[in-house]
Amino acid sequence: MASLDLDWIRTIVVTGGAGFVGSHIVDDLLAHCPNARIRVLDAFTYAADMSHLDAAFRTGRVTLQEGDVGNLDLVTEMLKDADLVVHAAGESHVERAFSVPERFTLANALGTQVLVEAMGRRRVPLMIHVSSAEVYGTGNGQPVGELAPLLPDNPYGASKAAAEMLIAGLRRSFDLDIRVLRPVNIVGTRQNTEKLLSRFLELAAVGRPLPVHGDGLQTRGFVTMADFCSALRAVVARGAKNATYNVAGDDFLDILSVARLVLDAVQDPVSGVSFIAGRPDNAGRPPLDTRALNALGWQAKGTLRRELPMLAAWYGARIPAGLRRQVRQVPNLAPQRVQAVTQAAGSGLFRSLERH
Image (cartoon, rainbow, N blue to C red; front, side, top):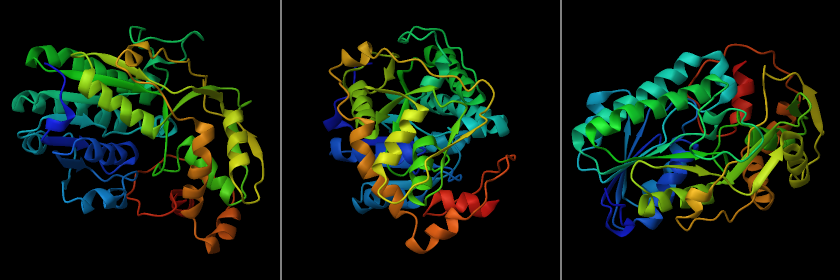
């Protein structure tokens, strides 16, 4: 199908819209699709938070349905008369994937399969699937393009690669247009503090050392949330049918360098880094070739270094001053099987410590 004119999109469905990435997508599409109403579907697992949608609800253009993307009847009803679906739901934490890989298979792979079937039933014109650069694995050190083989090396990356394979196997049968985004690590507010940057920022804010796996030289790419959202809009408006696009900013850093940037950005007294044993095969990630996305007129504008002062203030403010000493004194935690639980608003770090 032809790409969609943002001004004329009337109904958008965002899965996972109460999560980190999904809620920012909702905010961005409200701002850039002035005639659209947005339906949010979210299962409200531990990483979702109703408060992420506070500003969106105030527009009067957003409705919310709590439910699982794996529920075919529910999803089919949600997609009625939809012009655009943005699929951001799913599990996304690599460390958690080693503990509960079955959750990732169900949410990321089978949930995507159900969504595609519902899309076929409703004849939705376009879906944007938020995948991950984790599908590429370690690479060979050279920039990786969209035609590179998918060689994931962890259960999370494998579940995202499986979702892409299911999309490829179904979209031709239903004659669908499903465009795939493969972003590197997205940085922004509202992220659960199990993730690298948000965890570093909250730990630094309470004066606890930042845990760095191994020698800290594993490389990672980063893209700001604003740049990711603009990439999504570019693919909706100008992308090719059933095409795949890498999304990455100019930041390509090792973990130790990220820790140093965080320590420079946090104003409170901090305690440096602590080198710990990492997960098996915690290798670096290759840089991404973004020429396909650049050809649509997209360029990354933000950088991690410029974003960090704002992010440090935001994540630091989530921890009430009276709790900072209490969190600082919590002993280090032994590894254990992670249980997904519903998490209220507030400091994700403190609540995760509280649960152990």
